[in-house]
Picture 1 (cartoon, one colour):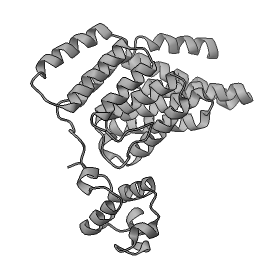
Picture 2 (tube, one colour):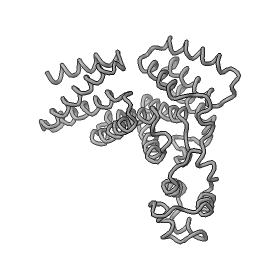
Picture 3 (cartoon, helix red, strand yellow):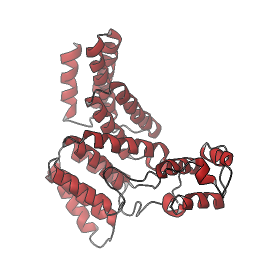
Picture 4 (cartoon, helix red, strand yellow):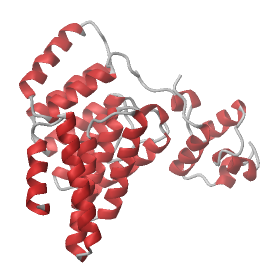
Length: 304
């Protein structure tokens, strides 16, 4: 069973549902005890945890357990398919998807349907309102309470659902609904802070990467740098390298933008160091034949 830290679940669910500590604790425990539960100063008993969650309208087993989690998709396949998608190898991706469909034709799974339809959408559609409606429809097959960027952060999402939420945020940004995109990314950031089971997944890094991009293009350079560093910290913790070069490049680009605003040479120096490191990482891991020449061109144009 996948389990959150109960303290974080209690606090996030209470805030999401609009309960004060006084209102929630009434009839179950005293306010000080609830505060200690939320701050990890005391582990709630099973009975108290159940009563508190039920009072907020949830069933603890639903809050802790994922829907249809990991029924057919493994992490290696996600990485393989995402790399094909990122490098625009659509024909190869479609071929692999067709083979997968044949192998899974007798598998009844909501996640299977979401996984395959999501990739088909990204290979055939441009970023439009129609695409957004398709993505939201796919998500609602397993997250029926999703509406206008609102979704619970007190349940466990599988990688396909997180990919769909990430896609929905990106599509909103592409069609001009940037505030909605930021709203979704902010909630995903809060979710990932507490969702221990998703922190070793590639999608967590992708979410930080895309969130940082959205902030950076809105001129929120410092906050974007902080989000990039979250992604890098996660990569270091999990000893992986996917998108590491891109996160490092983003920080360099962001420092370059800050330098353009204030002409403080320390930012130009930092920008050069990060972009140079990004180029070295891109060449070493040979992860993106499309992006490596772009990074090299940026370095030559701005720092040599």
